Length: 478
Image (tube, rainbow, N blue to C red; front, side, top):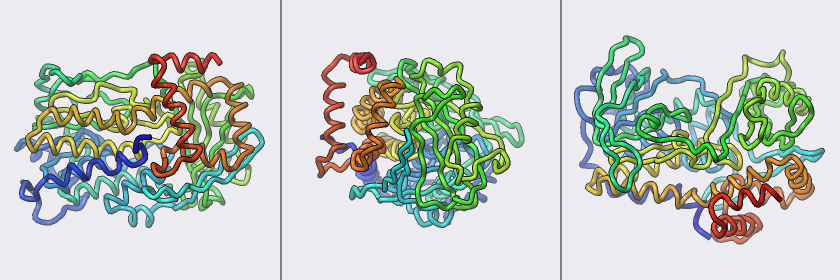
């Protein structure tokens, strides 16, 4: 079994350690605060060419900026919004996310702002189980719930404090000087970006040696370079809202595995309740595109039905809602590609790195940002575009097999009868559900051969042996 649970967190540090501190350039004498950096004029950013320009200051972009800036490279982050800003999300951090935040020196800040929880309370088909996060060695056995309003601000500030230049309210309008697609890559190269300062309306051109695209699930910049979503692969649709709740500090996050539409029919997806510890809970529903009703589903009605169905002790009602629910689509399982050009890398949600098993995207944003930082650092040190080819290979090695299995899994459970059979049976076994939690959260133990590892390996062998797509069709037909 490959080191799928360990590879991504550790791979970047090995490469970034090659960067000598003498490569620091154009750095402030003292680490800037986010407030100071955010006030820098975008005109100043256009006065010289950077080593790296990163489009997007969310999880993947800020992670990439932190690791590159910490290693001494001259990095500019262009964030369209002014931080802090709201972001539609479940607001839950799994142990994988906590590991990356700790490596960036941020766990204490997250703990001071967020709510620590110990595991998942799973509900489904009349059963309820409390599943604590497993001890894996590589990852902690707990997570946090924290709003993206607070979290993204913390991580972007951390990147700025490491030496990255952060321009907020900076909207990238176009990719300039597109170059040809070179062998080994699938995206065009980029010569410069035209960027608008949203406050003043002024536009400037920003140049760099390398560009990292981290502008989210709808990645307009990625598409302009040639990236596209594989529409045959599953994607997600989620809606979430905040509610005041007497159980805001519950020690478990909660999931519902048998959500239903307004007619009472089971739909492929799940509902969640994540306690924020500040008087509120994050409540949401997620739906998979594998369902034939995907295009016609009314997510607002689905959310209303779930809120009425959830445990009443949470106090979820129209009266306790703090505002309207918001939502969006999520490409999953590396569904977006190509991911590299000769001087371009696409990461995080812009590359479709959300885990199809559980809809988690934050940890994979941090991890792919870190991996991209390592690859770009190698490229800057002389390896050139071949380092970005290696990044794509490492990305596939870290997640490719796991996501292929996940795509098969979500197609199988799209059948309501299969879902009822599998989940109904699983919910009767604490041990089995604990193993399933490890599998779906990508928290494997390379030194341990438990049911999660053995079950995964059997599915992986099946998807590898059969022609592409055949495993999904056979399993779905069965």
